Image (cartoon, rainbow, N blue to C red; front, top):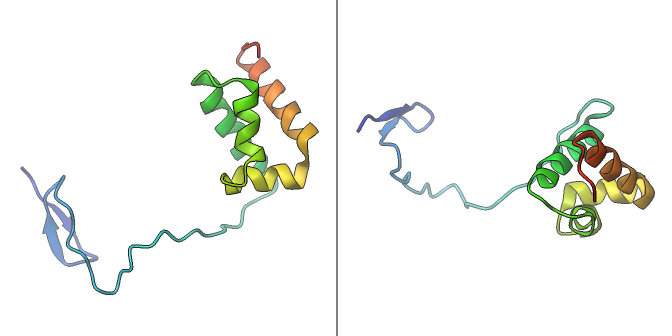
Length: 101
């Protein structure tokens, strides 16, 4: 098995072998807001919809991606754009893939 050099920790690591824990790393999930250009939020929403539409999700499940506060990114879009906008995006995306919901 080949090792992979990881200069940031100054050691070689074998694929599939967990890295040793660092005492300074709390191993906590940290979310960040990354600034973007106009329209990127809408493009992200459409890309997520395409993925779940192609997995066979129905309209109610797709809307839950936006209405549930557990999905922070899409829920923010729902709060900013409203239910009618989200439903229109679902309809447009389904139509683009020729999928009836």
